[in-house]
Every structure is written in structure tokens, then in C-alpha cells.
Amino acid sequence: MVATIAPSPRVEELARRGLDTIPKDYIRPEEELKSIGDIFAEEKSIDGPEVPTIDLAEIDSSDEERRRKCHDELKKAAEDWGVMYVINHGIPEELISRVKAAGKEFFELPVEEKEKHANDQAAGNVQGYGSKLANNASGQLEWEDYFFHCVFPEEKRELSIWPQNPPDYIPATSEYAKQLRGLTTKILSVLSLGLGLEEGRLEKEVGGMEDLILQMKINFYPKCPQPELALGVEAHTDVSALTFILHNMVPGLQLFYEGKWVTAKCVPNSIIMHVGDTIEILSNGKYKSILHRGLVNKEKVRISWAVFCEPPKEKIVLQPLPETVSEAEPLRFPPRTFAQHLKHKLFRKSDTEVDEKKKPNEDESN
Image 1 (cartoon, rainbow, N blue to C red):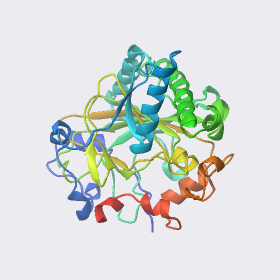
Image 2 (image 1 turned 45 degrees about the vertical axis):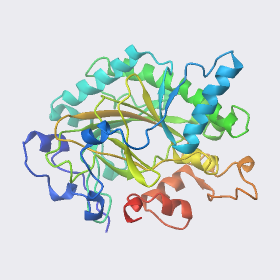
Image 3 (image 1 turned 60 degrees about the vertical axis):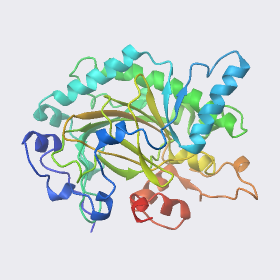
Image 4 (image 1 turned 90 degrees about the horizontal axis):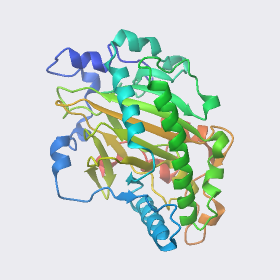
């Protein structure tokens, strides 16, 4: 039977108790523990591959050569890694600082205040303040609390869920979402051209301005007394079209690249961008949706702001675009709606090769 119980107390409260050991529900399986190391030592390491940094300053350049160079670098990163840092992305640093400050202030409120915004996952209400449900047979939990809500389009937001305190939360988050939606169009245009399609094709295929939904999840990872035994977020791929991530410059993100876990460095003034399952499917696997996870530590609180750009759940059938399929590149993904893809991943069925590939922690047994 699958457990659907939220942790009590919140992870934040556990961390404040000054525990020397973590509850057993947070301890990862033995085979997974072998790969969990010190995130600060990992970040300082100069060995191994590094996540690419893509400068978007010339993404709209009138100089064809500069524009093409930018596009080629972005496309290559999407093909090789499926994740990258983007810099000179056009979103003002002052606005990003406001978003971070507002999110940080919300999580600094007393737990009782945050609980006024609590979600009810058992009833299907996922928006609001929460913690990971024990949604697997072993009841494993993740060392994080979060705040989750839709931020764009404006008419699909539920502002009653958004925090009124701090007062800048709604204005800053709203403006950031609007600007991030513009950046999403630019990125999708480049990825479309990289597939030999017209530049607006991927935008259309994921729902366009009307139906592509941006959902923000602020992840709060408290200090953990035994970080070598826990994870902030277990290994997974994003179901989104694209995911954009800000963080408070505390390392934690790891990517499973070429058979090894690679720690993402902290790059100032950057946004981390993931290609999600949706774009991987539409591109027939040309663009990668990379397996990744989040580590925790005992020295610093980590906060990240992830915005998932998701197609409508039932309106669009996700399948490789005809132009991406050939005799040399046969169909790799079965047709599914986004809702069906979510269910497929949630229950981890194994009726296709791709979903076998995406099982969390599958890498540990290779």
C-alpha cells in the first residue's frame, strides 16, 4: 500500500531541535548512500565535467554570426547535458534579488504563520506550503519544506494562496514570472530552430501563451545533522517543458552525467535552466531531460526557486514531432497527454524503454 502521509513536524522544525540524528524515514536506501558525499567538497573539486554556461547576450542580435553562435551553444548544451547556466538573460538582477528576499522572508516567518498557507495533498490540493508526502512503499521522505503555486498566466493564478507577508512577495513574484515567460519564448524559439522547425513551433506544441503554465516551487532545505544519509530531493527528471532555477548560492544540485553524479557549481547572476521531459519527448530525444537530485548539508540553509513551464494536462498529446522521426531516428516515445505522463512517472510503470531510463536511482544499480 502506498503511504500518503505528510511529515509531522515539518522538516524545518526538526532541524531547529538540534537533533544529532535524523528520523529513519529520511534515511536513503543503502545502495543510494554510497554516492552521497560532502556537497561543499564536491563543489570545490576541479576534476570532471562542468555544467555549461551559456551567454544569452546575443540571442536576439542583429549580427547573424553572433546570434548563430549563441543559438548553437544553447542547442549543444540542450543536446549534451539538458541543463545549463544562462547568464545575461535579460531579467534584472534587482528583480531577482527581490524575489529571493521575499521567498527568504516567507520561510523566516514562524511555522504557525506559514501553516496558514498549508496545502492538503491528500485532498488533491498541492498549491501552498507543504512537505513531501511519503508516496512510496518504504515511506521515504525528503529533507525539505516548500511553497508551491501557479504564477502565470495571470488569470490562472490563485492569489488567495499567495503570501501577503512579506508585502513584496506578490509584486516581485508576479513581475518575475512575466519576464521569465518572455525568456521561455526565446529559449523555445532557439530550440525549435535547432530541430529544423519554424521558430514558433515548440511554443505552439507546449500550449502557447494561453495554455503553458508556469508553476513556482520554493524549496527550503534546512541544515541537516546527517547530510550523508539524506537527500533534499531524490533523483528525478523534470516533467516540464523547461525549468528555471534560482538559488541562494549554496550548492546542492547534482546531475547524473555520463554515468556519474556531477555537482553544479554556484555561478553568480545566473539562472539554471533544465530541459524537461516534455521537450525531450517532442524532440524524440535530441534534447535531454537529465536525471538530477538535491543534496543537503549541516552548515547552511539552502533555498531554491524553481519555475516549471508545463503544458496543459489534457489538451495536448505529447509525442515526437513528425519532423524528428526517421528510419535512422525511429519513434522513441509513445503518445501521451501530459496528465498521462505524470501518472506514468508517479507509478513508475515500465512499459517503455524511456520510463525504465527515468526511474529514480536506476543509476545506482548500473
